[in-house]
Amino acid sequence: MKVLFIHQNFPGQFRHLAAHLARQQDVSVRAIGRDYAPGLQGIHLTRYRPHRGTGKETHPYARCFEEGVLHGQQVLRLLRDFKNQGWCPDLVMAHPGWGESLYVKEAFPATRLIHFCEYYYHTHGADAGFDPEFPLSAHNAAAILSRNALHLLALEQCDLGIAPTHWQHSLYPAVYHDKIKVIHEGIDVRKLGPAHAAVLPLAHGRELRAGEPIVTFVARNLEPYRGFHRFMRALPKLLDAHPTVQVVIVGGDEVSYGRRPSDAPDWRTKLVAENPIDPNRVHFLGKVPYDRYRQVLQVSSAHIYFTYPFVLSWSLLEALASACLVIASNTAPVREVIRHGENGWLVDFFDENALVEHILKALAHPPETAAMRAAARKHAQAYSIEKGIETYMNWIMRNPEAIGSG
Image (cartoon, rainbow, N blue to C red; front, side, top):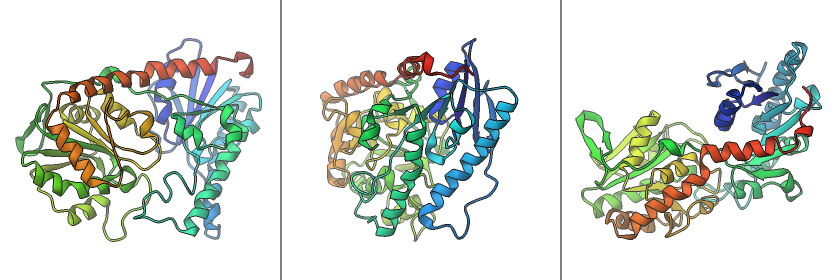
C-alpha cells in the first residue's frame, strides 16, 4: 500500500498516523510540504514553494483562493513527477486549508482522498465577531466568507473528511455532515502526568515546585484568540488578592490568528504596559522545549485555558492528561472536553472577576479539586495517540475496495 501525506507544515496533525504507517512493512509512505515543513524522520518529504505570490491587482476577497490555486498547481506538478516515476499512491491524506490538494484527483482520479477538515469559516456564531473588542466589519466578513470557496471544493473532491471535534464538524454545511467523521488525532498521554516532586527552574537560579501556589497559562502565541488579553487584565487583581502566587506564561510573540496590535509590536508588550505586574511574580518563558513545557504543567496549581470559539488546542488536552486543575472559558469546543465541576471549571470568557475567583479557589485546595484532577487525567485517556490511530485506521481500511490499485 502506498500512502501520500500532503500538509503545508508536514507532519502537522498527521504526525502520529504517518509515523505509525511508516512502521508497517507493507506500507510505503511519502509526504509533500512547503519549503519550511519540518518533516518526520523515516518519511521521504518533497518540499515545494509556489512559483509566485498573489497578484497585486487580485481582489482582496479572492487572494486566499488565488494563493490556494498557486499551492495546488505546484503540488500537481510534484504529483505528475511521482506518476512519471511510477509511484502512484493508493491513499492521499491532506490538509486542504492551503489549497495543496485541489488537484489530487486530476493526477490520480482512482486514488482515495481523505481530508483533514479543520475549520469552515462563519461570519456569525463562531470566532468572527465573538469579541466585541474587535468588531467584524462588512469588508472582513465578506473576505471571511470568500475563504470557504477552497473548503467547498475540497469537500467535493475528497472521498472522506475527518474533523477533530464535534463542534468543528458542525460548522461544515449540513449536506456534507455524513461525509465527515469526528476523529481526534490524539496526544501522547503516556508522557504526561502528575509529578508531585516536579521542579521548574527559572532564571537566576530560582525554582518553582509542585504544591506551591502557581498559576500557568499556555498558548502557541500570546494573543486575543486564546484569551491572553482577558488573562492579563485579571492578573493585577489576582496578584493583589494572593500575595505569594507565582504566574508562569508560555507562548511566543508572533501571530497565529488575528492581527498584531496597532500600537505595539506584539500583544505581550501592549498588555504588560497596560496592566502593571510584578516581574518577580509573573514569568514569561516564551516558547519552550517539550520537556520544559511538561514541567510547567506538572507544577501548576491552576491552569488557565481561554479561547474564542475556534480550533481546540492540544495544550488543553495535555493539561488534562497532566492532571492539572483547568479553569477554561465556557466556549465551544471547550465544552466538549471540560465538564464544569467534574474535570475542570468553566467561566465566562469576558468575566475576569469570575476567573480570579476560581483561581483563588483552586489555590486554596478545596477537597473537590483532587477528584477533579483525577477525573481530568482519566478523561484525557480518550484522546490518546493509540485511540486516534485505531479510529483513523478503522476508517482508512473500512472500504479497502475504495482504495485505488496504485
